[in-house]
Length: 620
Ligand SMILES: Cc1cc2nc3c(=O)[nH]c(=O)nc-3n(C[C@H](O)[C@H](O)[C@H](O)COP(=O)(O)OP(=O)(O)OC[C@H]3O[C@@H](n4cnc5c(N)ncnc54)[C@H](O)[C@@H]3O)c2cc1C
Ligand code: SF4
Image 1 (cartoon, rainbow, N blue to C red):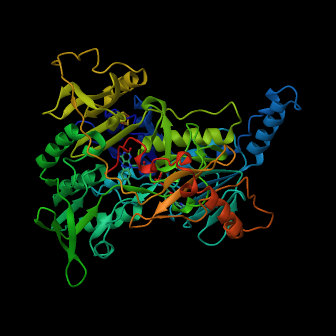
Image 2: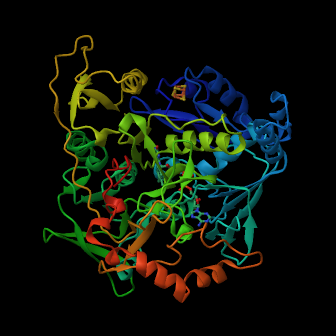
Image 3: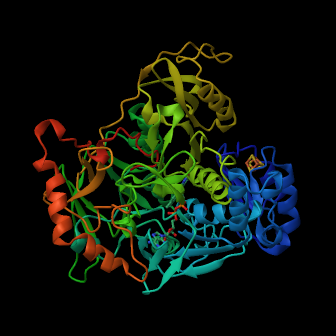
């Protein structure tokens, strides 16, 4: 059997551990460790544990979606419309036809992709669903990789997500391109899959060590996939002398925690002032630093790794740091954050940038002009979307909970008709467990400029910090106090004042302190946006990429003008691209291009990376 615990809801009460101790185990005060694939003889106990969970956080295979849902006939939308010949009747008939026989393609066979497909079936979609995944595995859960798997409690292969959705799975083959006019996803094996509606759920990948020769040393790893976790936990089991963790974000800190649990020496190096400071600010970061040092981590902040060195057999032996010190280590885990998997969308005409694919609150992707597309949707780590709670700024989140809730909205909206669509307005919730402590946040801590301890005690590392901005509470972070977060979520969602107008029982009156988020280093090697054209019919946004030296160069197909140059029947995408780059077209674009406009007509948007996007809470 397979299960997953929604740890955004779990409040660490521990009832599940009482009912099924072989499957659920509590560590410290509130950290829950579960086995996602327990033996079938545990089934009854797990069912009892799931029933006893006060917040219903345990999901078991067969309880959501599955074949039964797939077989359910689509509810007839059209019958609700009295006259089929009215415009709304025609739309409803078309929607119903799509729900019965439409073709949906999902690129990304992981948490968001599976969740969306499950919801589509639940909502009565009986057409075809094709799920394309670069990895060869059925969807699996990533959070246990740096926790249960690293601690040696379960093998990496025991992390499958529950859910058995009726779909055509194309696994082990990447999507390499998107041909919007032809409604085709191009695959790495040269084939193409046609769609009526597409969901982009390609998530992120680990940022590699920038020096390729050093990255190739035996013993240098990243952690994002099941394969990464399998080989890394094998190496940990062979007891390296010392593990070097580069980057003290959530992944790096969890890796360090697992090393200490296995009594392996570990050095953590981070260029920032404290662990987790990029996501939770310096104040909370200093609390996390204390936690790490108390557990025996050799933590070095404010320094960088300048070189990794190996022996004559190509095995990692040591690292040189910017403070001239040397760390002897035979295993290094590079935990420098994530890169959005968007390369396959270059030239597609969608609004793709450093922070992912921009979409509206209904998960519909923006094209490069910032207009919403009708049939392309985005969900999960690869999406960036406006959130009303945060001044409609675009959030780019790497949260398990966001991947689930956004995919649920996308799945629903993709198979519904106009007027039945939902906005993705969930307040971001994130968790991490490290050094026996449950760390959870609700809201976007980096959006705030002040925080205040409102419950508990920082020295005991059991507390809640409320975060605020402009007199409004915008986030809360809990160390081993998960049960209160729902209350703070309500305060955030109802725009309650900051500092809060109450004090918790027995709590000394607190005082706001600055959050102090370190500046995000932005390298403008990604796309920037510029706008060309004289009148509204001509104005278009264009993507302008930079090479390694920061010089601008045009990427393929960035002049996206589907209306001015429709694709002819039988014309291939490459032929279309050639046609759009003909001399006439070039001359026309030169005429419109920014340098040739009178000074007062030049309009250049700010670089995409500089749009004030709250830093992703898992950003390392
Ligand atoms: C080690 C680790 C620990 C984590 N711990 C936590 C935690 O404690 N709490 C928390 O809230 N979050 C955690 N996360 C984050 C969480 O796992 C992610 O937010 C979640 O996996 C996002 O799901 P997704 O489906 O959007 O993307 P992903 O899980 O990244 O899946 C995207 C999929 O798309 C595939 N893909 C990419 N490009 C292509 C292509 N061109 N063609 C076809 N397929 C493609 C990828 O191979 C991948 O399988 C953790 C992540 C990791 C790696
Ligand atoms: S809240 Fe539910 S899942 Fe979490 S520890 Fe309690 S019983 Fe287990």
